[in-house]
Image (cartoon, rainbow, N blue to C red; front, side, top):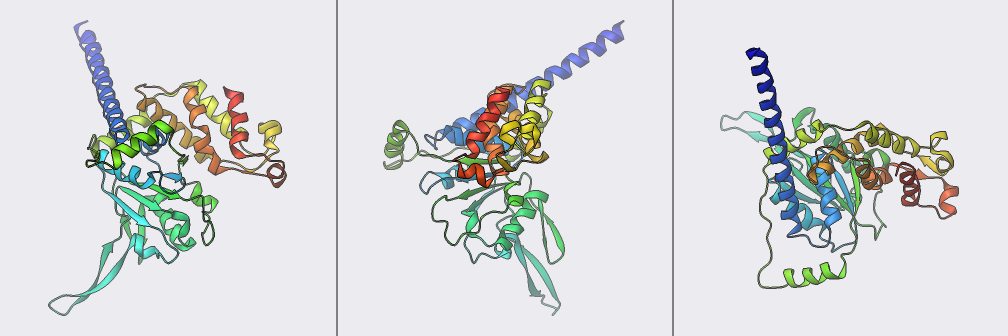
Length: 338
């Protein structure tokens, strides 16, 4: 009897420890969001989605016109999350070795020659790929391997990337001449596509006063890389209810051409694969954690459907000619599960 009681007490203690660890991690994550928000004004949704992407262990594509603090967001996230952050400005003449690194021939004092690998800027925990669509397909494909496989291969030798490793890429929707559109295979590697819009009047007023005065608000660390890894582990352990799983499956499967999409399916040329379902499953858990909840809801699925799906699908020529857009189509699909 005493033994059974002791076993029950141990189980309760273990559960308490897990709950306390989860609460501590959630508090760290919320503190990080607040710290980023104290520097980046008027972009709450963008900050939230960038954090969700990183908590999910993924990469994000930020799309917006110049001057909307995309670069500042990545720099601030690096400081707040305690990550080694680097920035690469993508240009048409950027070579894969400029990102990955290269081998150089060295001669030792004894006259012996050997190659030494000099790591490139990709060996960072948070990499900002600025204007990614300006680089050549060859350079884009070098980045693709790193994003997917978490390692690079130079001269036949494998070099593992640091953990955690995240790419936040930016793309300017203007001046598309001389750019190389990202192929579908690379777009699919991004967990989310995040639109960065203009701030509202109150936020822009705050930006004016805060950034043009004698003192500017500076970001402060709220987490460490180890805290982030612990949060990423917790995200993968959060329970997901059957209703949320069904909503994810219904949404992703109806976003493909075919009978499951009904009338909407006839408008779709190609749609998201299973990687989209995986991305949505992780993202809804991360959003729940960010809001202090330990289980996601169908509302999380509806909120994150567009950034997770829109870069993974395309409309038919007929649908585009009739004025249909991907956000409108996703809106109809969301209405079915809402």
